[in-house]
Image (cartoon, rainbow, N blue to C red):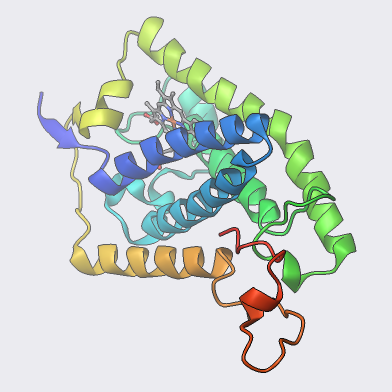
Length: 237
Ligand code: HEM
């Protein structure tokens, strides 16, 4: 049996990066207080990684591409009848990929506009009304159990493959290699540059870096704004 590079390096880095950052987001959220600054930073990083992965789904190597693994109900039925033969995500697993990426995007996206009614505000909070921010906050909180459920299902499905079907699908997600015969078109440096450019731009925008600095009380001549407003909080991001 030949060996095929089923998951390219960017797919694997994004995967384990997301798993680590999502764990970090849950931990910092449960700690609260000062740790919420890190909760926000982690959320921005998750948003940037998702932008990378979504772009990679169009320009990446064969098995990273959505067109390669997102299939209709007929393919899912064929898979359930044991008639699917393929190397990347199976048609049912593809649904969990979309569910994970989609739930994380909404979670991180709503977090950018959220507020905790006391001191914590997402980096893009100044762009929206407080009613919009409150709705984003509600969705952000409502999604938490759903996200835990989807991640739990994902990890349970992986465990089922490893333990019951005796198919170690974790190893390819670490090494990239799988024993199979398949043609793989690798992505080149231009594809990588495009995905990186989009991911960095999205991260910079999500972090609120392009927003004007918050207005401060007029300082008397010769006094800097920071000296005039010693109580003003430092920028959180
Ligand atoms: C917060 C935790 C996690 C998240 C958000 C997550 C997310 C994802 C996503 C989005 C994919 C699709 C990969 C892609 O095409 O880019 C995926 C695939 C995969 N994940 Fe995870 N994952 C998590 C935890 C884990 C853990 C703990 C394991 C193993 C112990 C794991 C093993 C795998 C494997 C083996 C695949 C490939 C499945 C296949 O062969 O189709 N994941 N995961």
